[in-house]
Image 1 (cartoon, rainbow, N blue to C red):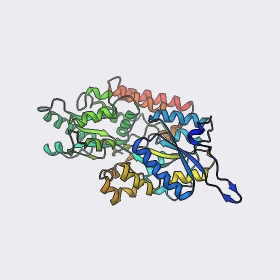
Image 2 (image 1 turned 30 degrees about the vertical axis):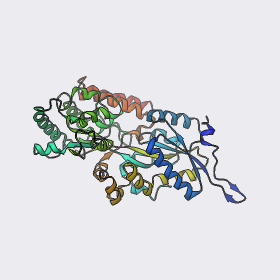
Image 3 (image 1 turned 90 degrees about the vertical axis):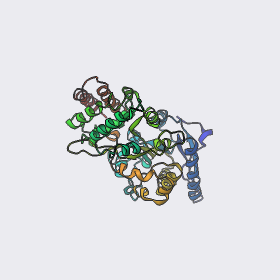
Image 4 (image 1 turned 180 degrees about the vertical axis):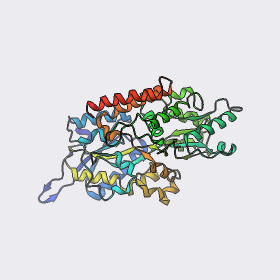
Length: 421
């Protein structure tokens, strides 16, 4: 299967003509739009000037689901027209067999990145993609309301529930629409992210562990999901069962919630001129659970660069992937795009802190980051995630207890693993 040659041109490997190396013609796919696309092009211009190679951007739909579908089609067909792929944090392990192993190429820089992010891109000891920028959620809190009620930022989910309840009840005298906490409760990938944080924060594991062990049916996980179910109809509205990121942000940004779990993008929007909470909030790591192994946990998001094993110029394609994930590019991306670096030292960079004060606040959050189990479940991850979020959503909506639903989930995942993942 070949993509339109008028779009990407004829690609070729580095060849020798009269003993002189010819520059490589590379292609990279991108679903970026607007400023994101312009930023990528600016970095490719520098790469071309430094290497003599040329790089063509092959535009992709902005929908990540559509992107992933196209990737699978191209890679399954052995398409040699694409050299470098931008991959979501959960995609690379599902496509590992189609990408080159970057372990040796990245050996001198891999230690600069947050370990959890490298873990998320490692499958069977093979570094499938090199991180470019990342994402992780935080607890957004109304600092004005905590100060008004003489409360501290909650360190545990139990503290969050107690504080949210007290402030919510106090504020309803003047704002009957006030709730204590909003999050992503709809039955979709976002709920997998939220619920993984709850389970991990209680010391309940990562659904499926790195060695493939199915760990979700345990007392800590039951306690975590049971606690979350107690929020619906109390500190969180019944409608939270249908909330995705934007619905949560809508309630929060109107000033109708004390706390919110969401991704970094909501920070700048919350401080926009049209926001009811501009200047009234801050962020902190998500709360921990209770019991042994309890600790804050934040699910990893983010994007990476992978090199197709079908590339006709693999060495130059690897150079491109390493360049776009380098500290130099990550710093410029952080300053200009407010994308969060995967290189830990950049969270202490004075230039980044001056341009984007939010970014240093995320360092502690990434130190507690947890990858979704896409690496051990590989091509079955989407099905594993769907079964997990369905079990959690059933519990949140009162359709069975956490004990019952996680027992069924364990059996379903065991069957799925038996079919081979």
